[in-house]
Image 1: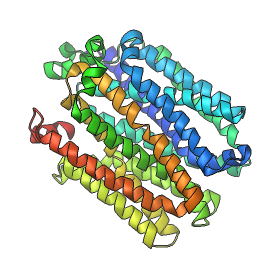
Image 2: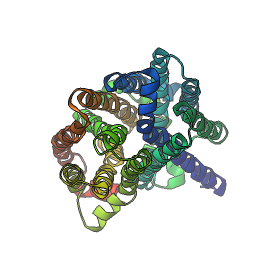
Image 3: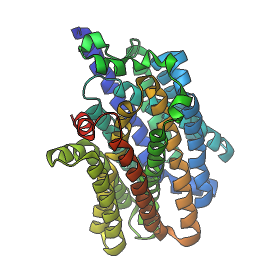
Image 4: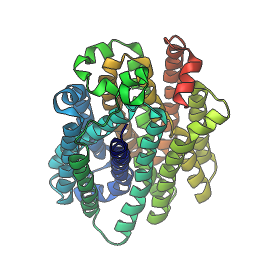
Length: 420
């Protein structure tokens, strides 16, 4: 591969990381902005849940057509259109439109976020070398954004900024990403088999350009696709239920000051970021299998919830939420990284798009239900509710682990591939 192509690829990988950082910014800040938005529109926690449903509708619509759009438009225009939709959504929320328009805007923002996530996951998964490490880094940058988001939002609110003004900040960052996609994704962001010298990996690298052969129906016939989808469906519920309601929990249940609550929520996202950077590497060094790592992650999540439930005090709150974030950190990218090893190359793009799009319905359903429980039972219900979700994830992973044992490649070979 020529030096120019290598430089372009490095730039595109950097842009991919920046794209997930942007998605994380708004995701992390959203929980801090909810109280102000709720007061402005005079809505309760149950109605707030409609915002999550609107966003998830966008995710679902994107999941249905992600493979088709990447075939027809190519990855560059797919990402440009998704980023433009996300930019427009932030600008609309900045002007504080009627609540009905807010819901409609969240649908388009959901489409935009899903396109950015799916497109960048396809891009990284198509890389012929170290794609699992890059996927962990990619999602770690989501955590970096989610870590920064609550701090920035809390700082701006503390400086007497209106909740809606923060969306102008996100819009400015989104504009930078859009310009990058326009000017630097003009060449196919993949490496060919000839350039890498690895035929097997080259098949994966070519999946974006041969996606015309892909079939969503073919992917849906594979049981492992549904198991992974439901696993991440519940995972998204755990991540976003904590991420969106921890701030309210700290304010109402623990009576923490707003700024301190914002920092503790950022600690949760910091834990998630660190988990994505180092959890898999620690598991490799300790010779822990992929399945073992997943069960360890779920165990750490339950331990964090136990600390929050039984130990009072600010330090325990910070430790508990941080441990939960660290524990769940590697779950999403590791599961996505399994896809190219478990399905035919021709359906990888459709599978990743479907997996990401449909599983993120959990972003709507589970935080909405958490808000409804909080409205009628109290915000304390967040902790036992999340524990039930974590146990449910354990059941789905048990099913996935059984499928992995019967995969064409041996489990040892798969683990070496994923932890390389």
